[in-house]
Amino acid sequence: MGPWNLADLFEAVADEIGGREAVVAPGRRWTFSELDERANRLAHVMVYRGVRPGDRVALSMRNGPEYLEAMLAALKLRAIPVNVNVRYTVEELQYLLADAGPRLVLHEPDLTARVTAAAAGLPHRPRLLARGRAYEALLAGAPADRPVIAGRSGDDLYVLYTGGTTGQPKGVVWRHEDIFFSALATADADGQRPGSPEAVVAAARAGRTRCLPASPFTHGTAHWTALATLFNGGTVVVAEDGAGLAPQALWSTVEAERVSMLVIVGDAFARPLADALDLDPDRWDLSHLLLLCSGGAVLSPAVRQALLAHLGWAVVVDGYGTSETGGQGRMAIWPGQIDSGMPHFTVDEGTAVLDDQLRLVQPGSRVVGRLARRGHIPIGYHNDPERTASTFPTVDGVRWAVTGDRATVDPDGRIKLLGRGSSSINTGGEKVFPEEVEATLKAHPTVFDAVVVGVPDERWGERVTAVVQPRNGSTVTLEDLSEHCRQTLAGYKTPRQLVVVDLVVRHPTGKADHRWARRVALDPPRRAGHGR
Picture (cartoon, one colour):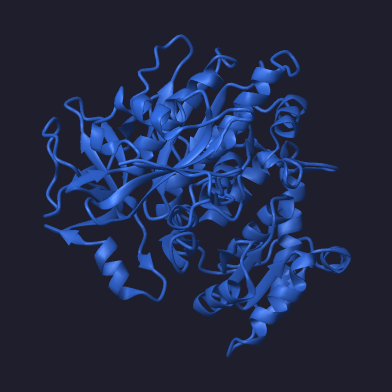
């Protein structure tokens, strides 16, 4: 077995527990041996289509076992799977494919026209392969044995494309060993990471987690969780297509498959799930659900409490991390523990807060700095040396991944996350982090969802504006929300403008779409309220 190579690790686990369920989806149940064999067959198909070590394989695919087999097949060849958002337009898709330069694009059948149009405009056109009957026939006719690929190691590359929600997507390049320890390795009861590949296999023998990642596999939160579950010997449960934001269907899957770990992304997933339990608290037997984890977006205190009211035996965890850092910390509320509501994270080794001069922020100093991580971090951004130098600086011989997230360090060493600096609002010289205001707004009984942005203001520079989706049958007013916010927030943080919408638009990951919210705030519906 190679040192920390992802394909080697999966194959070793599959050899050890081949008969155990690896992935479950509507109408399909594959054991580790079956998943491994399908990935082998697909790897041979990829070779027939010219894929070689170091090539990229773009995956424009929805959630399903096929997404996981495609990732594993590419990794087996020392090729690099590239995540592609299935919602991309032809222009967006063409940009990503031009940047990534894949040898092969594996895609859903209904995306054929879009993928074909995007590929046609590229100087080096990739081969295309659609899922469906022809795809299954190719797999059936391919060899089932593992492809023999020399040179696998922990230095093989992995790429995660990110940032398409705030600008052009960029590929974060990792070594296998670094992404494993930053995002995929499961710590033991003492918080220790595995010391050898053999230790990973030994731990997998006892792994019994049944994990349902509810967000798209094209985003790191879901496919990191899925891969980590497989490496740990657990079972990945895939919900029906589109069920991620259909709370009744999701709870029914959790019950039917006895899911022990549910992974969601922030309030966009959690609020409807909590509301479904409020409406019909005795409908589902969820006693086997032991861990509910939010990754990629922090739960607001009000929504977290709503979930805890129905899942009093479970641990609710807010996990924090980015595509450039992997997992960095977590805030867990255990059964019976009093939830303070404060977003304070216990951080992983190597995580720190750096000030504007890239010096360590001291605990209790109240200095606001940027969250950073050292140790197992990416190589950089694909085809972008300038951004790589900016995001991954070397300070006193230590290389850091420095994100745009602002934070302070508590006296006890925990980190209070304030929000992304690029989305902060400067109003009258004061800095406002939208996430803090959004969490407060969502605690109001009339608010279902909210996004906060800044819009130009002649007097204040920027005006704090709340784009709010009310609860059904509720009336939301600026006066009520301002009074509510002033109970816990400084006056300059309270919204001075309210825009009421029928639906708050979010990305498929559940993260706020601040660009959409800003457009709505600049051209609000007639029923919007205004304040000074």
